[in-house]
Length: 168
Image (cartoon, rainbow, N blue to C red):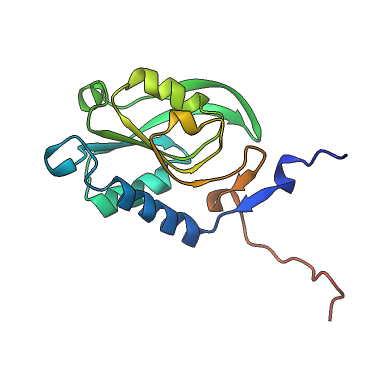
């Protein structure tokens, strides 16, 4: 049996789909915060993948405080140990109470594990989740298998592809 390369079992996400799924995430999070009426006071996007979903969730839920935390855990398609490159203002974050931490995907859960140690009371939400990472996330929209590689629209470019049969 031949083991497929990561890109061979691919799940291609369009800009339209990430927008729809991020809006669905916002709807699922609406009125679930600890503030008055279930409001959230801030969003922290895990850069870079969490920035687009965080922007959409912030718009949908009318959250004006949006910050980023930068964690590097991938070198192309190889995951290594996560490293915090920068973090939000400690005054904004506290222990994370009332803060939504947003990412595009939870894979192994290592990145979210690092952020969870920094902000234990934050609510962790991703658009997509793989089984190994699901225990680290509080809310997600779509589950995918562990061996699926997700191709996000910010990683792709449109290009011409030859037809499968012939050129006419």
